[in-house]
Image 1 (cartoon, rainbow, N blue to C red):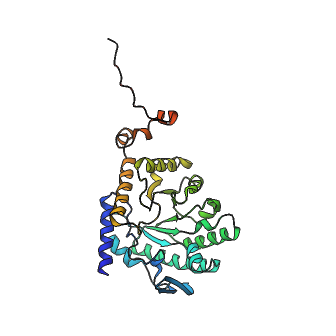
Image 2: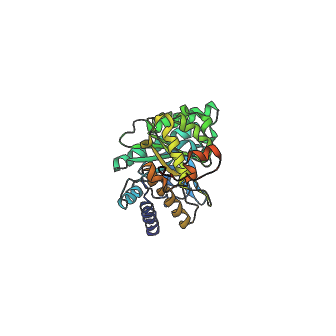
Length: 309
């Protein structure tokens, strides 16, 4: 639809103006969190959203055309987001591990189609990973589904996004059982996901979801830069393997509010690229002065009196 096209272009332009990279279409064409899979055989699309009728089976690309449209209007890399098989099984299939595997097969075919179309970055989003906990059956279901999803997938960067709650009790051995190149974590609704960050091997990227998807919220650059620096220090990862992001999508926010969060994110990312002395100019001095932490308050440095006269 023309209105969808215009909305996607506006979202891409807003992200570009904010200095964000990679870009997304904002999922503005999707109805609900699983709308990207509309058209998958075995799913019916009704007033209440998608409903599982039969074994989900991939027959034709579902997101390639919309990704191509977004990529054609962007100056940088465009990421395609897909819902994860574990969450799909729980939301649409009563948590049946067999349904999770069927969704994984379908998603693997979709990822391959995106790769063939030239997409270089796919994010698989799990909203229900907080359900796993210490239940070994749930852990096995998650591991099996994601290992199947990535089996044989080459030619692009696949990232796993954990949003909506704390998934740390599942263990990094479960969360990253499949060879994802990076892990994105919601640190707002899932602050304990920091434990996943510190356990993630240093050769994997980390995306810190540290900008809240709610309003109002504290989106100051100091908090975002602290999150990025902490992730970079974990497992000797380095800043080159760390990114900043929102802790989920911004679909429920007013346009002006969503744009303000994009701007806050872009500003923090830009400051992070500066040398320490230049970055300090843009930050609250209390956030970077070591005496503030030691004394609990900020005192500006005394001016140098110069040589005795």
